[in-house]
Length: 219
Image 1 (cartoon, rainbow, N blue to C red):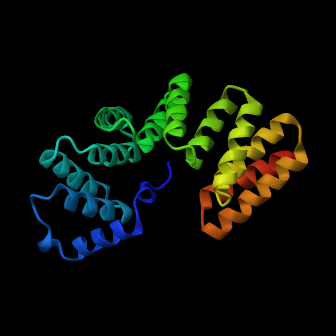
Image 2 (image 1 turned 120 degrees about the vertical axis):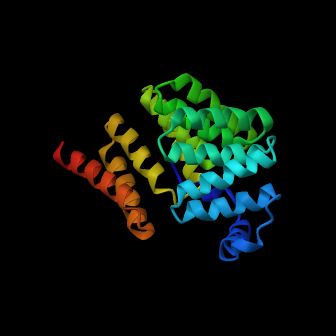
């Protein structure tokens, strides 16, 4: 899953960083203060501290959809899929117009092999936000697993038109081209993914891209 801190603004994080630096200044009755501090803890890799803050935000405001969303993302990061799923369900129940909640729930359904459920959630995310590049990419991944190669390609094309610096989607599009037998297009996409992975310091993407390039060179 992509870093969940991308779903908030830099200004929101900046305020949270100040709260971490000045822990004594946090208002113990302000759920938003706990959310902001929890986000910074998460960015620092302190997931248990982040989780504690999101739990406290929910205790103070049980109808805070964002708190459930963020708590669910932490649980997902920890591999606690059922807890994450319960939180995403609650986030959607409280705010059915949040495209991000459908995206994250769809990812879990995909991991569980419930592809039609995942597809429904990605469709809803796109319906709510037609410019949601990640939702197109995730839906394209599902189409690829269903061997609906043209639909997958269409979604990856749309995702990249919205976010041309998404190396993961270049990798996924390259795999679709490879399945179609278009080796040159596959190679071009893998090379672009590799270029972006190096520029962005994404070692996992670089490794996966190198493996795909090796496959087509050996074919």
